[in-house]
Image (cartoon, rainbow, N blue to C red; front, side):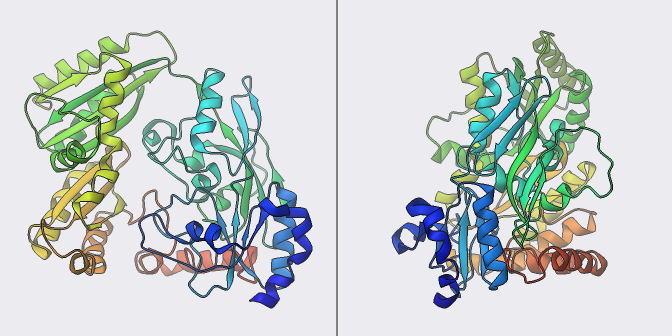
Length: 470
């Protein structure tokens, strides 16, 4: 590997001290997956500051069969940015490519480099009274390049779509170093194959995204948020239909929270408090938003009355202030973090048709509890788009290693149920290293073969993020 890296030495003067790093102590954090599931090895970290430098790096790597692993904010949960243990791969971090190049209020677009932090894009948009709606728990550290490479979802998919739906144009460096400059801002463009959709969600295996033109929307200055208690996920689904109608389809978030998950948040997340006087088994956190001055408050109140009359809502609270709204969202946003102090957790990111969510939760919970008695199922997530984070926490006082040793067994139980309901084992987190075998099992051979053909066409020497997805 050392001889191969020597082929890149001609780039050291161009990349500079900040762009060429061989210090093991600096590289160390880039080798570990956030949950500790994967740890890789690499002796070189490159941090280019523009697409031309990325192009030069990939051109030399392709000529010399040097494998590369592109990285963004490293917040992914499937090991997609972690190198192999062999040490035969170099790292390319996009963190220095963090310039917001242009914002157009007339065209409702923002052009950004791949290393831009998601929250910075949101803030820059808001300064211009515009909204970039992609929103997720890691938005303070994840980068837009990583968001696009995994086709991130988040809380606003119901209204605005996945990351894929928010992209108008891309700049991508291909495996051979060529730069595909397609930073257009057209809403309609039917000139043959839509290539950008191949790169979004490909996890850096087909090319490295270096910049993007993103859609913006009018900023929602009028927001109403409510936490409503329901007796079951089935009633929550019925409430979803009512909420869409009551808001004139201005519903942007509809999140399911289980009582066990809320209790974990209340135990471990500072600043949280019990939202209602009584405790309930299930809750829905929903939000209406609009840029107009229409009476969303009245619409939310009417929804509460109507749902109560239909016995769909047992109790609830409508936020009276921005601070109270943030407090309600903390109960949802803290769910993943609050599970860590509870011991081992086997996490799943599945989606099923919305009308099957209740069936899925019931069947999967029963099957998991039969397989591991006293295990604690924490089901929560984006009910409005059918995406459920079905996490299984270890039994209290159980041996963590023994519990995590059943990871594959629990996966098979949960994924089989999702598959039988015509669902997906991967809703928004991607494939990475973690779910490669599931892709082979649950996708048809035609789909997998086509993916291999596309990969071979774009990256014949397999230098781009090898061992990920496929």
